[in-house]
Structures are given as C-alpha cells and as structure tokens.
Image (tube, rainbow, N blue to C red; front, top):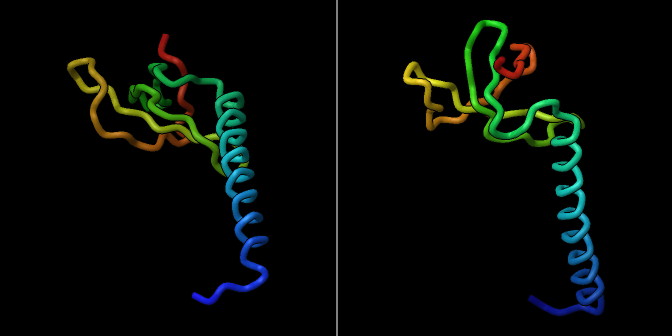
Amino acid sequence: MKETKYDAEIKELESQVELLEAKLNALNQMRAEELCPLKVGDIVVSKNGKEAKITAIYPRFGEYAMNGAYINKNGLAGKANHRLYGWDNWQIKK
C-alpha cells in the first residue's frame, strides 16, 4: 500500500480510539455490575420457580443483563449458560 502524509496521524488517532474504547467498555461493565442488584455466584429463583446461578453480568442497552446456569435436579449448576431475562423476575434464593 502506498504511504501518504496522512498515515502517521491516522495511526495515532486509531490508537487513541482503541484506548478510549477499552476505557468505555470497562466503565460500562462496572456500571452494569453496580446497577444490577445481584452478583456473580448468586443463586436466584424465577417467578416460575426455576433456579439458576448467576455466571455473568454485562452491559446491555444502558442497563445490565445477566447470564446464568440453571440448577439441575441434583442441586448442581449446569454447564450451559442462558440469558436470564428480567421479565422472569429473578430474586435471590432464600
């Protein structure tokens, strides 16, 4: 590819963008974790009685979303992760 007088400035700006995107992603993750009333590792129960262990909390649409592993009949968390939707009203198991 032919070099131009703009290439150095473009590379510098791309580097700055990468750093800002990394910082933005980290801040969005921290915000999601702060907004979520649950924590990774919590055992939760849906309004239908389904149990799950929270495996991830992450940013989604300016709020947060959660993944979890459903609890099997033997009482252990399964290996597959599923999105835990808010409309299922997940609450900490008491």
